[in-house]
Length: 191
Image (cartoon, rainbow, N blue to C red):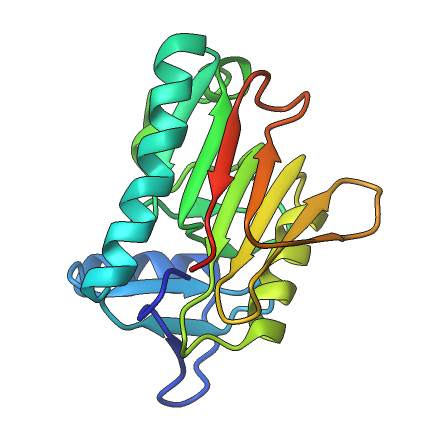
């Protein structure tokens, strides 16, 4: 999650997909996710620094996509119903037009039942690094092609690719969208 968007559990609550949908409908103002095991995660709101960093990441991705016209960009408020059973909301995400257009209008309107092709998670000072690493693996197990876990505390980025070991790059860094986001380049400073 983005900085200040800590993943905390008041108590461990396990929900199936239907129960999660009802919980979201009854609590529209809460930011929540559900792990593949069904564990409900309630996230705290963003602070100023966090909101700015997240907006920058989404903005850079959106600007690239505006020119490339290859897919759809999503904010951290979008929950994806992953094939492995989790309901997750990356800090920034992208899906190719082909995959997005394969969904029905109803599927597009609700929690899209697919994993993004590309996802960014931005670690906050209160986020557990192992929890975010597990989340990135959950994305990979659900079909993610490329993912970046940006860790300002560790001054590094973990790059996740399907069928490859995690690559760790120290900040500052220039990241490439590779063949998933052709031509997308992101220059990250030291945070």
